[in-house]
Image (cartoon, rainbow, N blue to C red):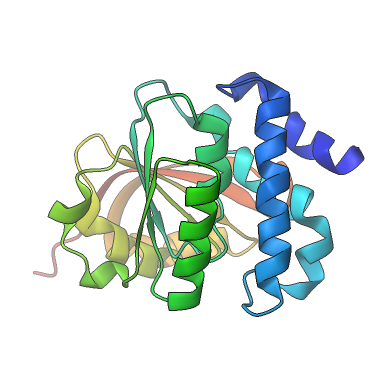
Length: 215
């Protein structure tokens, strides 16, 4: 199936055999479609393009990961992207995913997927600014997709950042302007990579995030 091929292109980075990962993604897609009827998890326009617009878009993060990446923190998880496809592809490796999502119905959905697919996933049903970073531990990787402006993301991410933490973020066409704006208030080293799935999008890798002094 051509749709599945969009996700299968990242099979070299799967921990398990390709068929096992694609089977779990199929199960995820069925759950997403079922829950979408009562909870807006993804935009209706993209529901028929789950494999390309959501699964492949999430899985393109895999080549940016290292074997040492063990703890992931996903902010504003919504329908589970990019964290749940990454957790599915990583199953069998010592990787733990903490998903932050304040909307109760979405929390229930995320926990259902994690339980039914036996994923090492914890879902926290609060806003990131309501969470003490000691609850999560210091993540190796912070992820977020289509959540907020770069400046706002920096504000939310900063309490969780450790010396070795990096953020891997999906951003759109406005990323240059957003980086300029956030640069007025934040120090950050940025690596930009063109998105595989969005012609105008990028994947930003952020390191060394620190607030600038207001003095």
